[in-house]
Image: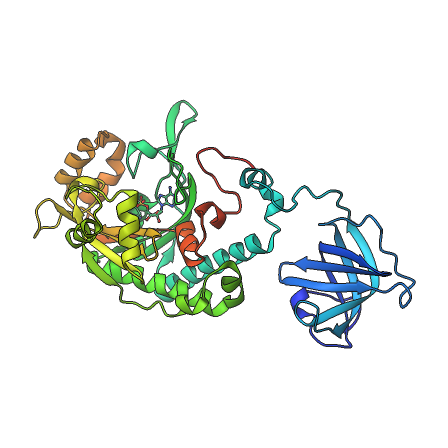
Length: 429
Ligand code: NSS
């Protein structure tokens, strides 16, 4: 191999070969006369060593700092003590960008690390989480593509709420008020009439005023909508997509998953169909843990955690009371007071991953429920047209990408599923 061709650290494998690599200084130490540099790039870390007596032409700056960017040429050698079993004997060294006093050191507080997020992103852990997230979204797109869903691009600046007024971010849009989208759903509902099964992957915004380990104010929302599907059919779409994402990341990124803290085999074994329990059965489970909750109310954080801990695989809760679900959810004709809605729950305490269900097709009842939520039906006039002109039964769902990554990798806090998390007290960096 020519010494000029730059390869990734992952590809430095054959003892005796000369390689050039580009990376950032991860660790540096001097031992006797030798300098040891552990270099990192997006594919891994590699120990490089300089012996001045063997390669006197190489000059390594004494003040070479952590996170300086460098290009190193060297000969690969087997070394059992080096991480990965291979070490590079440095024969050429070029400083690209110096780094003095890298501000991240051991034992810093979470808040300081969050202030330094733009630098903290270079840590192995965050790098691996972001790589798994990218693979998860790629796998989602792959599943949709293989199942003939069309990708669509709904707006982010919108004129009306989808998920209730309490979590709406509003902004001035020239001389009127607009909002940041909470969900692409209403737009996907419009798109099924021309494109059939559709999906989108967009940012969604929620003005969540509570500090929890599962709420962001901005997240990436994977949503789909299908004509002529009902509640059962949309649950089948959800579980197949969900299992495909879990299985694909387990197959493609086992080392990263293990390094972050989850056994990849667990994800490889997630298979559809998932268990389905009714809201009523779920309330019984909550009560069996001596947690107070009224029948008809939504699950609180404690109840949701208990339910989620009760199972060791993903499962659905379906047929919720009408009053805890938004205006667009279809009423269950066989169970008055209940709706054809389901949440896909992750086990192990992580809770809700998706919400989905059948949509109300009837114009009058949707108008009545928009009013009951305190909205003006005029703000939804375009949406109501969908019920006026060739309305069809349809169903859809939304999956929070960061919720999924949070659970898949057993992260403590959902913010670690984001490069630049947006939460109640943070919009920077
Ligand atoms: O509000 S949802 O439960 N449902 C909707 O937005 C529907 N309109 C989606 C649809 O049918 N097209 O949100 C859906 C999912 C939810 O299950 C979570 O996984 C995620 O979006 N979600 C969040 N993730 C992170 N942070 C926050 N605040 C958040 N809110 C919802």
